[in-house]
Amino acid sequence: MTKQLVSDELWQIIEPLLPEEPPKNPEGGRPRIDNRAALTGIVFVLKSGIPWEMLPQEMGCGSGITCWRRLKEWQEAGVWERLHQALLDRLGEADRIDWERACLDSASVPAKRGAQRPVRIRRIRENRLRSATSLWSTGRASR
Image (cartoon, rainbow, N blue to C red; front, side):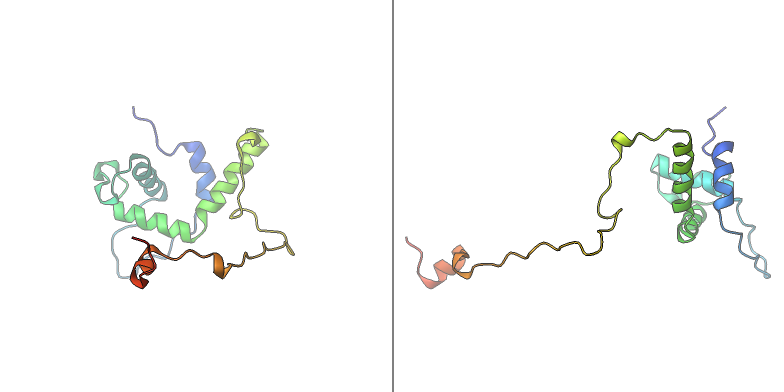
């Protein structure tokens, strides 16, 4: 038996974070693919690196484009950010975060208010080098 890409434990964490299913089209259309099946397709494509269009239909995840649209929909709804926070909370509660390997950068933590901006270094006009091309065109270059 193959390993499940979306375990029951992971699904229990993710399912409550997903947005409500949009209302069905009154004119009909194809039935919406189950969220867990779509997530399985998303995980498969991201882990394997195959193009979305190459997602095997035999997996029962719908088309690759359907999975891509669901990924985009969930991104716009903030699902991945909430999932990241939920998983970090669980790891923190279990004391499983190795803070020795953690890092922050300015994209993660905003600067404190009133922080001094570095002073801009002024160019000194006399010290700028002329380009070799301009020296040749003016006849100042030594031959």
